[in-house]
Amino acid sequence: MYVAPGGVAADTGTVDTVATSEFRATRLAVPGVATTVGYRSTGLPQGTHLGLPSPYLTFIFSLEGPVETTFDPDRGADDRQATTILLSGLHTSPAFVVQPERQSGIQLAINPLASRALFGVPAGELPLVGEGEDVLGSAAERLRQRLMQELPWEQGFAEVGRYLRRRLEDSRTPPPRAELVAGWTWIARHRGSGSMEGLSRHVHLGPRQLSTLFDREFGVSPKRLSRLMRFHNAKRRVVATTHGSGESVADIAADCGYADHSHLVREFREFTSLSPTGWLEHERRNVQAETYPYPED
Image (cartoon, rainbow, N blue to C red; front, side, top):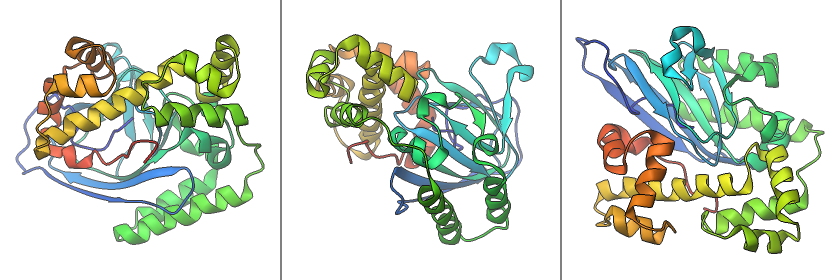
């Protein structure tokens, strides 16, 4: 789930200030951390934007106010969950995130295989959206308070890196089963386009047992995880068209393993509520924030 500012926004009013956004991305030398993005924005139109499904767990230290999120915008403000340290498991529908006028934070994409070591529980036991302090304890909030002291990005990233490395060193949670590590890696290597039969043969487990183990460990079935990875790959390629890749949506669909152009559009509508071109139009101002690599990268 990506919830930094600049997502799909629906204006609910006007602001007099000019919107400005800053993104700073880095790679922490911490096993299991795919990317780390610092973001700071002011003058944003108040509204909502989409936190999209991803094959990563989302971990955010909000440095302004809480992040307010819901998966059902029709239920109103009472259904929103406000978190200052957001920790999100895998999900396959968009999260609707309130976009205030000011936002600042550090967001990490976490490989689900690292959930046990970093968070003490399998990814499948994490909430769709939850308060990170409830899982990580008061040390996480103390770190957030230090990060709120307007540290330079590099210093803030270093603080987060030290905190996560300590958690890895102190972890006593057993790692995932070898078959699950092999299965997740196989799906990533095939970028979500491998068959379930091929996956079962690779890990020497029957489809039913494999599905049970994946649901327990990751919170999604092997087929769902494959769809997330395939969508993630296709979304990156759609973003690349804004940088002159020259690919059409039909080209991307064929190369990413979709049956045809319409299949990719249906997948985009399920995961984003918009078509590829519609999503890109809303995201165009801040596609620079789409920095997550593919899981295999």
